Image 1 (cartoon, rainbow, N blue to C red):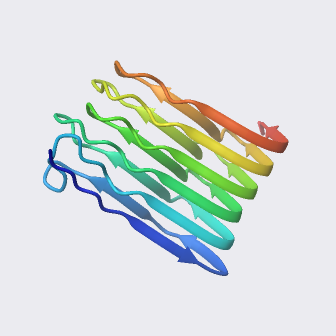
Image 2 (cartoon, rainbow, N blue to C red):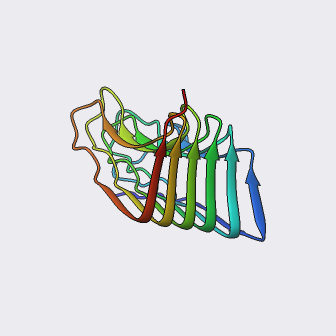
Image 3 (tube, rainbow, N blue to C red):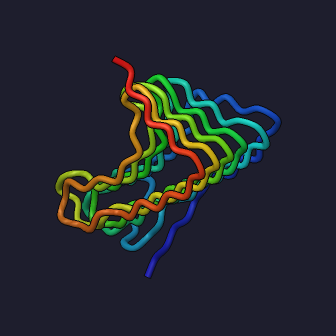
Length: 171
């Protein structure tokens, strides 16, 4: 049995503006059956601001059971806007990673913006789970919070704990 783990840990303060943080394993980088991609852990004391940029932890390996890494975000404010997304997806036989967000304020603004855990076509490992804990959730202008499945595996669970939810659609 072989295993491989790699990951990214970010300790950020007081403000964090991501242009792009991407961890994507390919066949060349992870090739062991039953291995796991690394986790992305982000702890920011004030704000994580994604503006037309992504935090992705996708498993691109299609022929072996490579498990997806998780994304964990803890911050006061998570702002995902202008096409930005936070996503874990699998394209192969391994299960996709989980996405967990703990923030006082979560704002998802703009078309194609949002949070997603999913399994792509021709995949069989299943999607990860999406857990969102926040005081205030704003979903505006076509942004989304979704779990999706397009392959043969099981879809992920969506667990949401929010005191206030605002879903605003601008025309």
